[in-house]
Image (tube, rainbow, N blue to C red; front, side, top):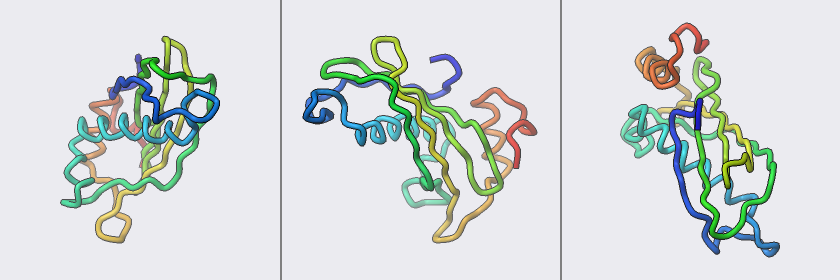
Length: 141
């Protein structure tokens, strides 16, 4: 998936389906979560997410459903960061099945330590820039 530094692939399971036989709308949140975790692993943020440091928390999620996905199909999910602010960042996702887009999603995350918002440090910005192949200045904040 060009333009998405983190990609996961999975097979649709029976438990993912709704009564109409296609992937339930809520399951897409789990699919994008898998891609987000992969992205965070690439950034070195997985430790923070396990309670050992500042961690990103989801503040907003939105999904546009483009076409249904069915049992047994393989799904590829790509994740990238599209905007970086002072204490938050936005991620974009593409969910594809049979080589065609099935959904597009976006999440906004806030960095927290304890119960307080904290700024994204320059080191994290530099890691994002390297992963996204952008100059640090292009990330905003």
